[in-house]
Structure formats: structure tokens, C-alpha cells
Length: 108
View 1: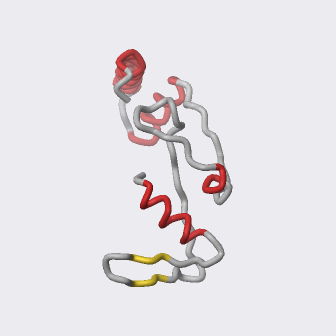
View 2: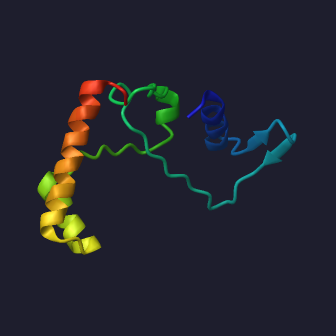
């Protein structure tokens, strides 16, 4: 996210719990039950990702999730989305090939 967005989130998550919108000169206070959930791809693995500051990261509970094994992905496709097992296996194979190309190209 752009630096301005991260700074705004940081202010929203600090003790002040407020968000100032410069364009409108508006000060926004979140609902008392406001919660935020965030995801991030690891810095360095994907192009353009920069590491977040330790202070910002400390505002979140970090949970690292490893990639699912290909067989599990195929099973999810089959059971959850009613995809034929043979087609699910082909989809997973295409995913693996795309991952290999992405890693080799250093585009993402």
C-alpha cells in the first residue's frame, strides 16, 4: 500500500483511534467495535513489496500460512467447488507451472 495509506492506518490503530482526511478536513472516529484484518505477501518474494516497519507490524497478530500441498488444493477444488478430480488435478498442474514461470521471470 502507498505510504499515505499505511500512515493513515497507523494513526487509526494508535491510541488516538482517529483518521484525518486532509481533502475534506474531516476527523473520523471508528465505531467502538471496529476491527481490522489485513493480509500481506512477504517482502522480497513478490516484486514491489517492501517490508513494513516493526512498529506497524506490532499492531497486528501475525500468522504465517505455508502453501497448501497440491493434493489438498485439488481436494478443495473437488469437494468445495464440485470440480471433477481430473480437472482439479489439471488446474493444480497449471498453477504449479505458473508459479515456476513467475519465479523464473522475477516479474512478481
